[in-house]
Length: 307
Length: 152
Image (tube, rainbow over all chains, first blue to last red):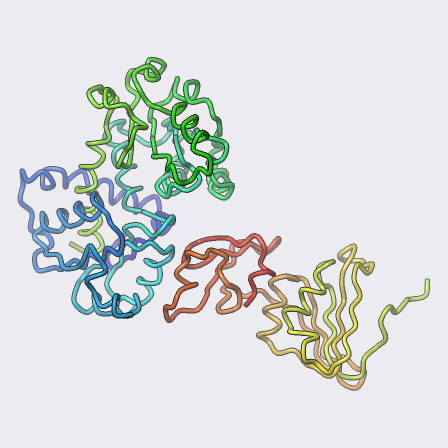
């Protein structure tokens, strides 16, 4: 199996075997990601980092990953300084980046942009988030975090909490967890429930997710609690927002009901859905999760570049 | 029982049979009929059918459908049959066929999809399921609830 030259636009572009190949390789990358070991696997290679939308973790971890492996990075984090401002279309920008680099990482607010980029570029294209659409590398680092903390994915009881309707990370993650046979519980306000088609995808993969609004009950025997931010702007009524946000706060009081080895994850940035007192507990793995973006993206880059 | 003919035979043109019951008017809309047409068009809806229970039939005089138009019909009436009539006889008969990929026919209902922007690409859908027909945008992966309303 070779991932050389492969575009990674959606987690669905990868088979179970390919996902495992990336995750296993990422384990080997940890000492390199921490700067404890040198590995010039991608020396002479150039990554085009095209961020048409702001990003902190994703962009910085991709760029760190490339530098740690001896490669270099070109690109932009603010499209207003590029020719796009002069009216150039995205396809022409992609063609140019393709000519200058060996691999393209792209984030854009419009859904489907990475797929379009993959059609026009010869170099492999990695989607770093397209609108409310897909974000496969986030999904891979989430899987990696569960694997590192729990040792396996199969049979894990995972509670996905928050905005399950619009949150792009939870859609890919639900699919991928179902692919690996995890048990899924979706906890959200009624108005932000997991879309029907994602639930259907899980069922097709042999996993019957449970949807509930009762968080306390859901976390009792859970192995993983995956928290996402509920965005205020999704609510037409601010009082409804305050009610919802209050009922889904992850704090010490809630964690009293959890198993000792429950891990709490969050794709960050968080606002106030996880109380800072949780940070010091062994439940909290969200900062480790953010670090895991580096070894996982190192693994992805070296695999698609055939390094 | 004597066979009852709801609509008279036509001399030249196209008969679209086995249209999903209730979809005939949408078929006409897809074909751009009756706007600007000089043809005589007959429509029968909710006609009894052995195969389908109920079906719609459309007869268009003096017009032979081309394959691209046929594919468009297939999106809302996947079981339809097309009969090309010449001098009262069936000159050609074929079933509509939903292609594996639908390019440039259906608009993605997602306003934030890149296929609805000023980029040099055409709308593109892949067929997920044929019966009932489910299609998915190649770019943003959105599945339109109502295909007929999104036909370009």
